[in-house]
Image 1: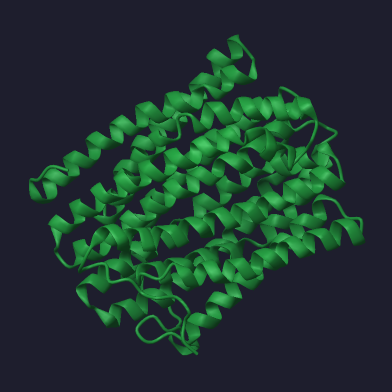
Image 2: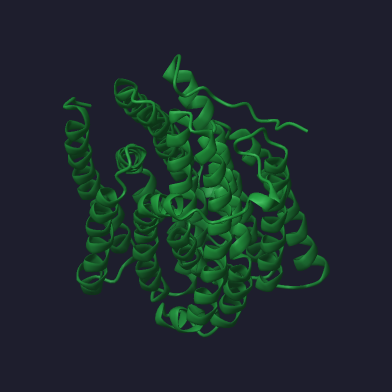
Length: 450
């Protein structure tokens, strides 16, 4: 049985259409994943109550922190396998595929262990209100138990992406996502469960998606076909994946760490603002998945072409990714702002929650195009094998500014709109610094401009 996805030749032909063919299914995967996650918030918001809705929302940034911290294995696997594909090194591609899967499972087990131990003190330190905490902690504990399957799915998706196939992970996600929504409704409406029900539904759907991708990998053509007797950890390849993946994972985790701190500030403003912020996040994040998809596309296309020593094509990929990303992100951001009230009412019809949610949407989406430069420049640098530079810049520019903002400007004026201003401010500074770093790396590689 062959895959339904079609591989894209990244080394030859037009970049405009191929980049779009790669990025759009990837964006759809992220958006559908978020929509299915949003179903958790919407179902508990409509059928359980706003405290349960706040409980699920209060975990979003913390879960993202844990996932992003350990997801570096998949990011590194994507770059390494893409580079080897560009070089035509089939023997090492095979070893890299099996090493990446073992690494994902081990990272998932570590994430579960660390998360379960840290969950209670971290939630308490975030200032989750007493009326929300019991619902929040049970959701988090159940969700963390499924981390090995979440990271396995991420690595399997990275393997397909490295070969130019983003459709197969999308189709598997559709199947598991529909399953997630059905199970959400079953556990909440039929079994009268609350946050524990939606967390359990999420785990079961993640298990399904990872097993579906594993099923397809077993039926792929060599060198990416998975065979049980070939599972082993190849030290040199794992080291190379971690050298690229760990800084990339830390870069993504920095966003989540700063958002955990911001979530703590949101928690101090009460359950209404917590619920409103949760609803708005599930809307605004749709635009981010467009941005991120072109960043990941840039990583994979640059990775393959750099492996094939096609430096001019690497620069063309970055330019095209920027133009496509800016155009689509701007259009989607305008649409989401325009339909903000309607979309927010899907989560909760309370006028107060809708009004606060609109505040967050304006501050995030009106400046979302700045994120385009951050993601594309970071993705391109990772494709060249430079993962540390964007990680360090993001840590200083995003995490540093946001932490300082919360403890100074927000502390002096503890209002929701004051807190939301930190997003565009940190994006502007970080995007400028990443642009400079990209030009420096590009000059060192081949002495050429963007």
